[in-house]
Length: 418
Length: 146
Image 1 (tube, rainbow over the protein chains, first blue to last red):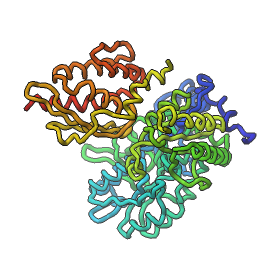
Image 2 (cartoon, helix red, strand yellow; image 1 turned 30 degrees about the vertical axis):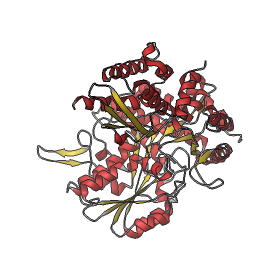
Image 3 (cartoon, rainbow over the protein chains, first blue to last red; image 1 turned 45 degrees about the vertical axis):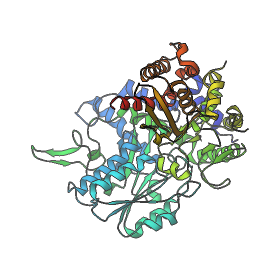
Image 4 (spheres, rainbow over the protein chains, first blue to last red; image 1 turned 90 degrees about the vertical axis):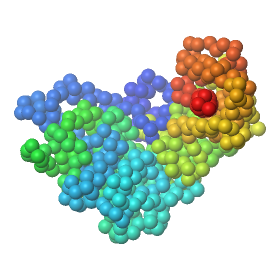
């Protein structure tokens, strides 16, 4: 493959592979392994700068606050955002809930009305959503009286901008969609969706969980209004993620959580809030994790996201080839040769995904089985569960070959080839 | 025997290919539906208990992994015709064996269901193996109220 630090060469940068040198880890779409650089950033912060953040006047608090805000700047730069445009959340799920709950508060009259939804307004999603980018919108619709509509997927699990056009109307206020599907690997035509949204004055919300670790990402250039992503899929720690929003929007979004560190003045009856991002970060934040997240983003930057994408494009092709070559295996998502992320979900005829997963696990191949938090998409595909293999910077062609080899034995083991 | 072969013993694979007790559960006096939300496995179990407390008839339908389907099948062979009290005892014993992480040896009473001992090493699969048994347990409890 390339002469870069990707694939097998990257494993030296990941402590997990020192403990499991023969691991075939193809579950990075669920949780990626942690970059040593991220761990080191966290432990250096704990050793040298650990103290209260955004509170008090001590030098120690100043050092900690500086490290915390530096982390925000670096994560913001990584996704093409301004530093005021990144709000920490416990993960993308939390970020999307924060957004939907803020809109819900606005709908109840608790904000300036910029995000207030009411009877007859519409929220539009795709049938391919991860539950985290679906259920918060279902709840917002229930609370506000808005209607939830969706662009359906086809037999391969793919949605389209044409499908969105069918359901978007002048009453559409929000269009939420996945940048990269966590089941099919489909990559969204973001600019087309943004253009459609703007034509009706709707806000766009991008689920960037499966794109931020894999593609060069410039949220400002993409022109989306909001986005969410999670550190634990980006070689960083669990417990931290971010909500991106254009600064003027975040400044107007009612805070779903209130309390310490997010106010200007408080009386016994009411409170005024700081500008973004602080207004949306009530209470003590996951400071150490934020620093670890920035360490992971720095590491990805050092690899070069264009190089990461090129590496993973080769892996995507190899994954498609390996899975397609096995008789009795149905691959979902983009057709072979079409653009996709390095993530494949498939069904093995006559063998349930759990049994496929157990067999592959026994052969040392770690993959994910289940509905991948996308039940409606699986229902549309006509299956209750699929098997998914997903790659990252440390994945190489040998991993894919091991998957293909083990997959080739599954049907005979379970007697499904008889 | 490898761990995998211990999990998927021949009797389990045989039952998963030709499941016993499959049929329309709605003809029975009591039915219960169980779903494993993590993988979508589901079973609807139906059972009819005679006046003397024996399980006169049971039928189930469902879709899922080989462990859940084979387990419901083995259970059907084992418990159809037995008394409700014996069935409760077998269900309890099966559950304890699965939860023991290999520590509890099955008694002869479990017959072919003893083959699921290998499941106890795989925490994530216990729910699969229990699916049909939990559904029958619910039917039998309901029948006690008759």
